[in-house]
Image (cartoon, rainbow, N blue to C red; front, side, top):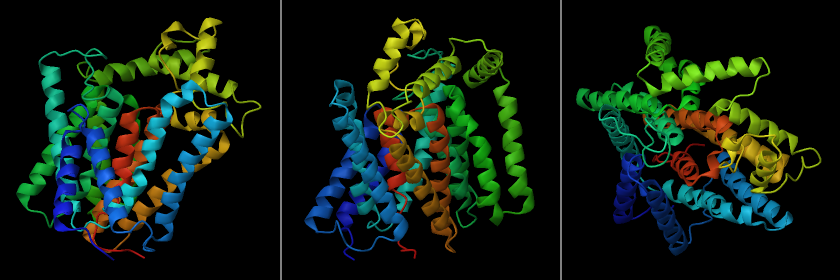
Length: 413
């Protein structure tokens, strides 16, 4: 199998480090890095006639097929529903998902890129945490007031920061690393956790529950019992202590969420973030009778929401929203049950492949497997309360965290 030249390998490594390291803080860097890596992949694969090399295993082929099907079904649904302007506004984001395919096919051919991957995560955790503390200590405000939003918004800043922290746990537990290297990893983990806390992103922190369970069943199995079971307990206690601190943005939002849940359980509607999501989720389901197979069409949810606002069935505060704030419901309303099924299978295929990597006997691939598996779990949980493919940031980070999951010299069976 033809390997990538050393010069292109070095360029790819630099792009990966810059994208992971600065993408959460510096505007446009994440999108630029993702696009640059994808275009490099397209040129290299075309020049070397390596698009179809016959080297993909079954799970990798499924990953590519489900990506292609997701884009195809969405485009067909848009065409079938009349090529609406609302759908046209989102086609660029959906087509960007297709770039994951050449990026994946290219990256799996690049030897030694895993070092750039881990370095990018360490730099990214430190940069995100440093920026968040500067934002908090100096009393900065932005679109979401005191919540740190970085280059996008608090949801992605907090969610991806938390993903970085959890992914790096694999390197922290690697005793083959030098003490200095593990020290930097520990600092990056701590700062990334702080970045997530200061973002006020509640949905991402809910992902800690399944992720800690995942740790016990996977990465923790190679640790002494005190670390396997003690780390999740300690992490949970620290999370509770931090989240009850009124100075932390996430704490205040958690309290707001509990109050809203109490109101919703009593049949009262609220105008808070949770109440608005509940209204949008209800509207998404209400729009589906008669459209379960085909959906109501890409972008049509925004029109349905506007009509609900005009008729007084929804709050004026939701006028700015164009999607139901759940990727599962977005796929359902856009193109029906088949697109939803493809999305779930796409996540499941990636998770299964990462688990296979983790199950290998090599420390290098096990670490990569844990990083990818934890990232997919977090993205799947985030997708419950955020339409991650409805924003460029969601597409880019999903692409980066799933396409670069074969950066190892070893071809597994």
